[in-house]
Amino acid sequence: MVEEVMVEEVMVEETPMVEKKSTNYTVVEGDNLFRIGLKYNMSWDKLTEKNNISNPDVLVPGQVLEIPTK
Image (cartoon, rainbow, N blue to C red; front, side):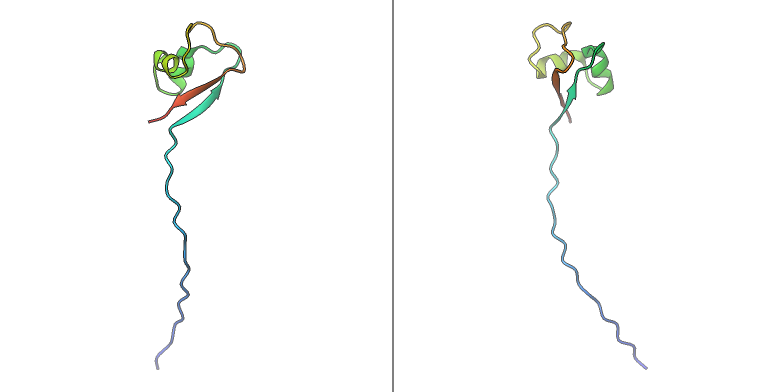
């Protein structure tokens, strides 16, 4: 006795992987670039350069920083 098995093929559309080049961080009261850098495992001067910050000692709550990813 031979048993027949029906196989249903399902087409799956492949979505290309999109690598995220950066993320955003919104500054809150008491933040500084050193602590933000620690959180994202990068130096404060890299954050300063990436965000065109002329005075790294001045951050404003609500300011949005771009955090580069690898």
